Image (cartoon, rainbow, N blue to C red; front, side):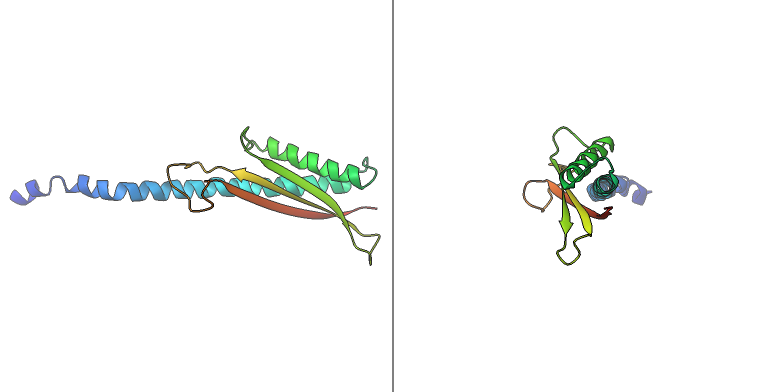
Length: 145
């Protein structure tokens, strides 16, 4: 009977010791999933934007195709539902040519998004001191002549 009385609070002590570790682990898994979702949405927006710019038959010339790709990537990013009013996102594109293959034109697009972690301030991230992560994505497509 004495041993049961002595072990009465051991479950609470064990939980108090392990709870912070388990909560941190669960938050880390959730944070990584959310970061991966943002990265995939960014890559998809850039890929779709470069595709729209490459096949845009209404665009006459390099400048219009580049602008079309940038606008499409921005609209796809904002339509993903992950864009917030405070995030900084940039989409750039250009037509790349090679002197040896003058008839081959490639539309190259890239995008960057500043991602603020969900656990901002709760779990300090040793990234760059600002608790912000910059995500990058790039894509390219052959431009039809």
